[in-house]
Image (cartoon, rainbow, N blue to C red; front, side):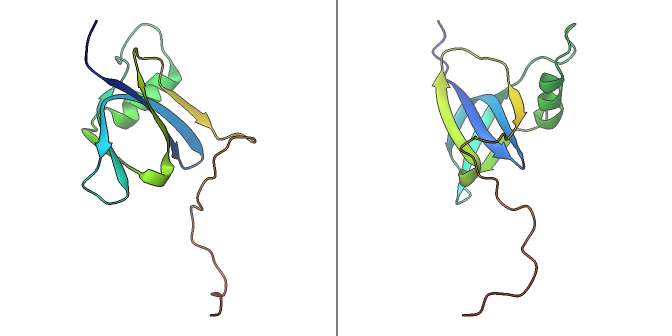
Length: 111
């Protein structure tokens, strides 16, 4: 059995929840960020086509290190084997609050 650690990282990206696998997760040199490196992606070009796997591969294929805002990371789990990466929409009942994508418009609050 391999002693190489494997992590499943679940994080919020806009209105979707991403679940990816990586060999390295730790503190970032950027304050407020978590560093995710050595991403483990499905091989592109296999006979069976999984749209989610293709999307993850297209989005992260050239990424060496991913710096995720700490408040977007939902959980980091050390796992014994890799599963399928996932992307899903945030659903009603999820315990996730998406941050506003645009600044508020209108008058500024008075002090």
